Image (cartoon, rainbow, N blue to C red; front, side, top):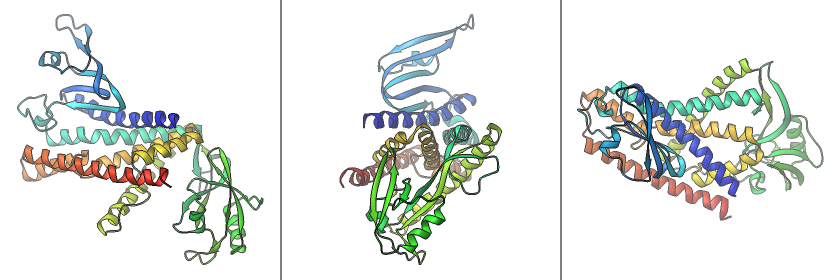
Length: 385
């Protein structure tokens, strides 16, 4: 449990830090004043500033101790780089980010719509870049993938037959099989491919079969009786399976495969978000597969036990999810702020600062409510069985 918490904090910190770094770099590029760039969240342990002495142009630095307020005198020395007590990513405080100080040239509010758009979009872009880098590295060292339709230069090792979907109310669901489980054998019979396994199960419909499952570092024996499935018309236990393996490419091929895979994953996650929101709008309720902080932390622990490359792949997926979530046109998110920029561009003047700030405050409260609901579902799912 302790290792799970530490790894979860590290993964979350990297994702949030990279996101905020994107805002920071682009804001600096457009000469917008960044008042503070923090590692972790307040209270502050200490901060430091790097500045040039006007007469000599020699770089110097000064220390800010504790969590005291940053004064106007401090701001003369440039951005405060701070280390904070809560190790959950980071933050960037940009001058005029809430529409104030429009008359100052170094204020976010005084810059053009397209410059503000780029600053707001930079965090999302950096999360996409991080995911791409992680996937490229993964393909260079070897990363778990479905082995179907791979290129001729792919090097595949550690072949497995793995569960990629468990249907609701199926024999497999009742036996508590999970996505990611590896089928070692059935009735002590091993299979080279999934078609042979499917044929064996279909031929033994109605008979109790002994599944040997590998989950993480543990092996589990589960007795399951196949039934004729409505979706196939054949005997089955209600799972979708695929042949997987550790896939590795030469470095120059890994770069292209990493870029392509990042875009394919992004599209797949976009479709999943669309289905989620469609279900909510049509009154089908919140998807049981949606995970909050507790669920993600639990999954992080499971992935960590599988190995570093699995954790790296999981981090890439989380980074894409964070990018898409932040880009949704919902108040309090980057996408919501961009939506107000679009409205400003169309109507030719900014939305009233009070109205926009109120919308972001309400949006934030709704997001916190959603987090509480999903967290409750996670706790019920993982700890109250």
